[in-house]
Length: 216
Image 1 (cartoon, one colour):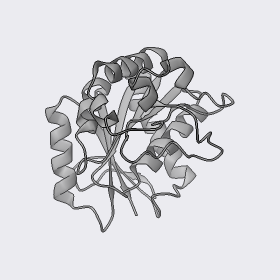
Image 2 (cartoon, one colour; image 1 turned 180 degrees about the vertical axis):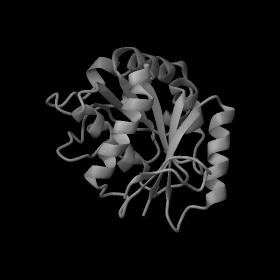
Image 3 (cartoon, helix red, strand yellow; image 1 turned 120 degrees about the horizontal axis):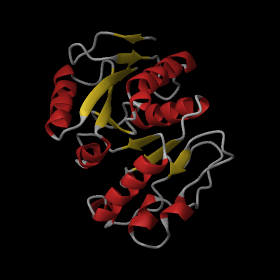
Image 4 (tube, helix red, strand yellow; image 1 turned 45 degrees about the vertical axis):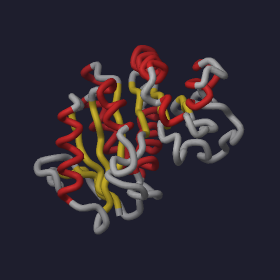
């Protein structure tokens, strides 16, 4: 479980670990160190985290990375943009009825009121909230762009937990704004050509691929 210089996408960075939902702390810390060195220290403030497909551990990776950055005193915002299958609605000790991105996009609540700052020791979280049938379409509205721009201005790092590439184009949409992407695949499940294609598509929309995370 280490950050090493080989991957299915050629000379990309890969972080391997035993279980997608139980990331080893030393590996997460090493990944956060790389993100600080390669992005935060250079004034790069946005990162889209997306999986090749469902179940590869992208959301777990995004949340673990957000917490690791917060421990490094990096002011971090994490946004769950998967309005079809939200994941950050129920982290440990979450307020399950707390409004989130869906409510902000529908104009039912202001962004500041939807942000969960916790006790200040971890990242600020904008959960998916309570999506409705039309919420996915609202992702592509001006409202999300304004939310992302707020995060990029106010936080040292804004991590966007986006839906997998095989189910949605949201990751490409948000990556245009964040400018950088971290791709997640699962060992013995994801295909190398799918990860390679995903990386190529990210570059085509103008998002630099800073690395890939191999789980499983």
